Length: 259
Image (cartoon, rainbow, N blue to C red):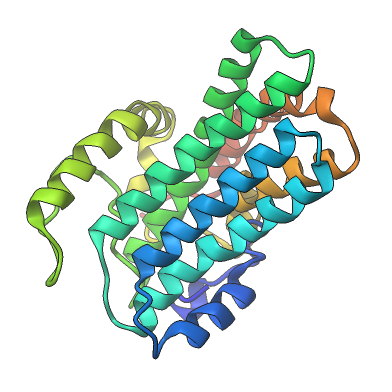
């Protein structure tokens, strides 16, 4: 968890691919591979997983979903090792995630009895869950001494491109990012706008919230695929959203700004 200062690091259940991601990044550090190349690789892994779901190869789908999470951790690690932060990579990563999330559920819908309408609800729920986790996590990262500040608490202004990347490309990706994620961000901020004023969150709370992290969500999908629980995946993520108000109430009740 190199995005945070040591004192703010917590057990992140969604970040199980970090160690393997660091190994991949260290292996690639002296090559011409860039973090964006790695981002493209996790996209390929996700597409292969979707193909495997459609062909009823659930064990293979499970493998490639987990691999996608591992590679997803590697691109950021490689950027830190090579000291090449990039808004291009940051937005591509997020856009790949939301597209793949939709396609994962669409593929599951195709091989199960779930309706497309229910699948859309599940997609909305998954994104809202992930947004809650990201909201608290980005607040922590931005308030943490030496924390990674590539992601902003409020994504309402086009960022200035880092050295070596195109401002036009960053601006273009930012606009797409806002369209894809802006609505979810506004909902979560509306539900818990006070969290943005906090300087930190207890480690136990962040570990609890990490159950909504994308890595853990994908792990749940992978496990259910391996167990052939296809029919349960989409309804599960709708019900899983019931934790959102619980987590927000916990935050508002037990984690307050010190006066």
